[in-house]
Length: 275
Image (cartoon, rainbow, N blue to C red):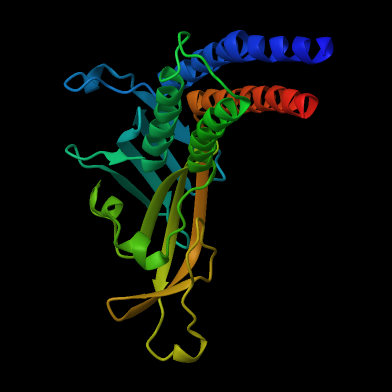
């Protein structure tokens, strides 16, 4: 009986003290993550720091991009493309009035903030009555953190016609020629730029025409049809650069998920002992 009483007391201590200590730790880590994604106050967007990233700088690279990131928005992109076959260099940049929202960063930040809201709803004065209640909260927090991480690690798959008609293609000056397409995305902690060069397939090549499906990165030889023209990807250039604060955020997600799991394991251990 004494052993059972002692276990019950320990379990109550866990629910009353230790759970809140872990929740406090979690809040601190996630506040740091949230700070990395810092949201501009409406009207003060310009105060959010602008960072320049150089993508592809070796002499081998056909593409060089200088991208300006301000929070979740690409506020400027400057792209040089050495055209295969000729030694011509094409130069494009965003029009002054344009910026491109990186939906992955926006979504990840929203998930972090939802995790923080869940934790804030259970402050020190809240008394957890059962282990199941703690687990339910941890599962909900872990779900948001896993979604945040997945948004950064899983760029959107797109078909080539979707890329060709995306709003991004209308943002450049001079306008992109019909045989060049670009895409920006986040992969883990990297900001990636892909440039596709295309050629038009002559109308008589129907027998081998096989449109490509959806993909994050298409390969040379991929084909698609748009406005009754058939195209083939002739060259693909991918350059990337690490964004340090995204790297920090991914580390914070990992630490937070471990803290949640450790707390669930402790609660589970008492259940096993008590059963």
